[in-house]
Image 1 (tube, rainbow, N blue to C red):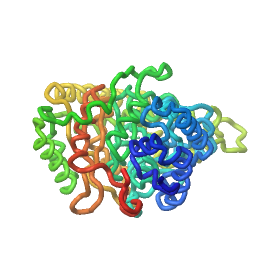
Image 2 (cartoon, protein in one colour; image 1 turned 180 degrees about the vertical axis):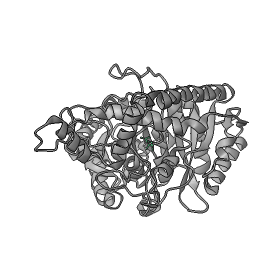
Image 3 (tube, rainbow, N blue to C red; image 1 turned 90 degrees about the vertical axis):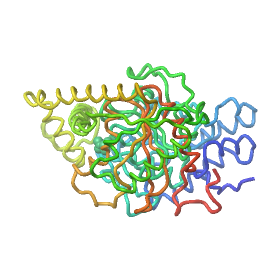
Image 4 (cartoon, protein in one colour; image 1 turned 120 degrees about the horizontal axis):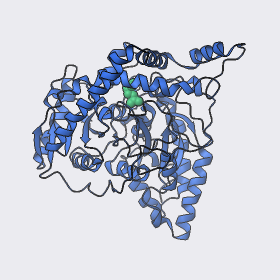
Amino acid sequence: MASSNAMFGAMSARRIHDGLAAKEFSAAEVASAVLSQAERLDEDVHAFLEMTPDLAADAAQAVDAAIADGTFADQGPLAGVPIAYKDNMNLIGTHTTCSSNMLADYVSPYTATCVERTLQAGMIPVGKLNMDEFAFGSSTETSAFGPTRNPWDLSRVPGGSSGGSAAAVAAGLVPATLGSDTGGSIRQPAAFCGVVGIKPTYGMVSRYGIVAFGSSLDQVGPFARTVEDAAWVLNAISGHDSRDCTSQANATDFAANLGAGVKGMKIGVVPAFMEAAGLTAEVKAKVQDAIAKLEAAGADIVEVELPNAAAAMSAYYVLGPCEAFSNLARFDSVRYGYCDPGHADLGGQYEASRAKGFGDEARRRIMLGSYLLSSGVYDTYYYPAQQIRTLITQDYVRAFEQVECLVTPVSPRTSFKFGEIGDPTEMYLSDMFTISINIVGYGGMSLPVGLGADTGLPVGVQLIAPAFKDENMLRVAAELEREYGSAPVAPDFAPEGGDAL
Ligand code: GLN
């Protein structure tokens, strides 16, 4: 019998499932231990913005009832497994702040589809997680409620914008979380924190109930420490939702192919990415090592060209701010958001509320989008950015005529120190290898492949799959996981005696 202070957050979903099935421990024990440990350990990390003990207790009680009446086996592998959500996801009765003063007091009146589906799978909701304000950023430093720290080195950033989602998993606070990715916000923090992070194909997961950033780019996905756990969560959250017109039906079991290996698989590498300026030697070496391991495992490595991908960053910083500007118009102090008191005229109220409610980076994106969509300027930037989008998409279509999956770096470097990158344009380069995947809408994920030789910090490789073939990248990820081992809990947070995966 495991003691109730077992580190359930450091276990895999499979381990928790098996322990529940064997009645080694109850779901109520899992829920209360995860909450009390998260409360204690999160003082250093600050991944959580809110914990949800009442919702967790209710969900655990339902799982324990199923165990008692013999129906637990029908519930699927995630029943009783704790999960937490990026704070741009509505969960009824909880705050959904987007880490912004604009929404500091906003309480969700309903639950997002992806969150609802985790609850239907029997998962135990333990809380809401810190992020860059409105998901603008790559470090979680733009949160209005203070940054999240990287569990591998508390003086460093966890990446962003889903920094809380990555750090909570890396610190072993919870086995799985959800994040969102508009230009790299799942994959880059997953790489910085050494966990698995999946941005599925656009349309795979409903965005209903997620606060929108870039509606043609946003996608929701899981973080976990094993590929299988991440695949299970993706199974739970994916599929058609009549309330998101971009969502697609999906009958794929993402965990089905994980043991298939890569023998005979055609896997692409992009030479221009490997030679990109800014890619550090230690990250490059790790990606090369992963490629070599795949080749040794029987994959056929093929070089492919993505000639227009270098323009993805420029296109994204036109399209992203334009969409953000439009989506954030609703935070006007009347429909939604902070209302600055004492204004006699509506214009003054709008102006003061938005000036005080939004932080610097949010204001920067709004002003950029407003300018780019203004008449005259639109034809110079927005329209060409859409044309570039088409060219990049054609590049990927051609590449995937030759291969089933691509392997690239996630981020050009490992995690940086707080305040180290002050220049916004330098920060934007964090996503140089991830952004083009959002531009085309394909699936991309980050898989941890150990520590960099120079910094000793986690490095991730990016695996990219064609639209609605996300199972291809998961299959490659599972092969690499067999080579490198599943993601460890960050050493300072690891439970004694190992990870108990
Ligand atoms: N870092 C990128 C940005 O700031 C991507 C953010 C995201 O994916 N949400 O726009």
